[in-house]
Amino acid sequence: MDEQLNKAMPAGDNSVDNSRPAKPLVLFDEDCGFCTTSAQASQTSWFRAQVAVIAFQRVDLTVHNLTVDKCAESLHVVDTDGSIHVGSDAVAVVFRESRFPWPIVGAALGLPGLRWVAQRVYAVVAANRYRLPGGSAACKLD
Image 1 (cartoon, rainbow, N blue to C red):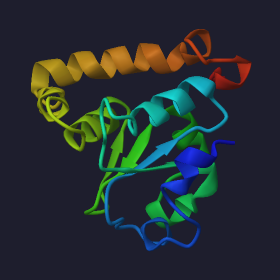
Image 2 (image 1 turned 60 degrees about the vertical axis):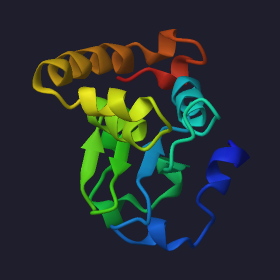
Image 3 (image 1 turned 120 degrees about the vertical axis):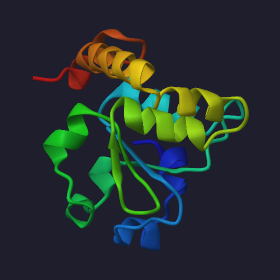
Image 4 (image 1 turned 45 degrees about the horizontal axis):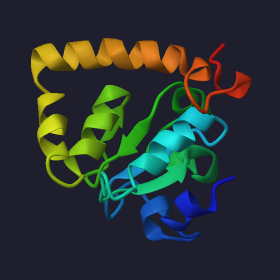
């Protein structure tokens, strides 16, 4: 669907073929316009996130012990140590891997009170992504 995002991870790149990517692997839903737009934003000059961005539909999820259903519900990031971050925790990783001042925001999202709020906000956004700019009926979670 989106050539630019998938160029970040060429076919056969080892970071997709093993559970420990060379840089954090951001797995987004290419069937959702809102998710695709959000993933593209991480690669703009505004963020310049040092992450590999690829649609979860193009990755062997079993390598990372993930499922299509879970990846369709929330953003996932496979970190360089193989750990998996989901939802607002995944967003925090992208921020931490971005240019200044975003790493501060990413670190703040990990603080106990802010993390709780971020998780709630992420859940509302995820549940309503089909209503957001770029969203469509394909984005709606059942």
